[in-house]
Image (cartoon, rainbow, N blue to C red; front, top):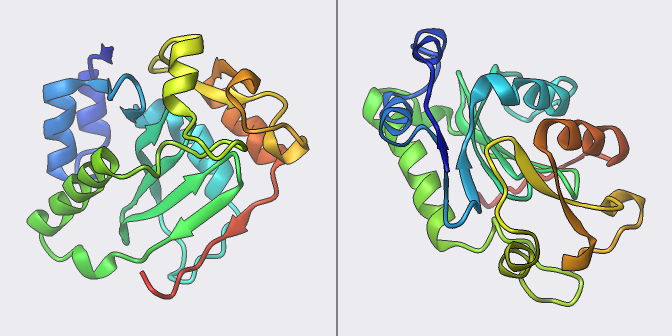
Length: 199
């Protein structure tokens, strides 16, 4: 499933995101891949979520202006910072925020483009977008079989949410409005800054 990108998005985000992201928007739209496990974000739709999750962050590399690039079926977000590049990942059901300063990779258009490409390639081969359930098995395929795919405005949400004691099991997942659920998660899930010195 894909949503065509309105022309005003290209005007609005010109100079704010890498040209390669524009190429993806032109070629695919705001599309889902791998049966909806990974999505290219409409940054306008996701900005309220981005603001909710980043407004009070104290990052080791300082503040930035954030744009949603991609997200998983379970709401994991990759964010682009105008100053620091693709340097923030949010895993909302755990409340975890992973900062990785990539300001040293912002010197030229090619280096900025490569950040987007590398992130999407990693998402295609790694299991980080498919959370492990409480039974130690990946969730995505079982949830997809039970509920069908999510769309551009929906996501899989744990009900009750993990922060309120809900189990991470397929029969406790529902398809929910993505933006609404992400803002609920921000309100009820303690936020943890996961600074990894080895990345």
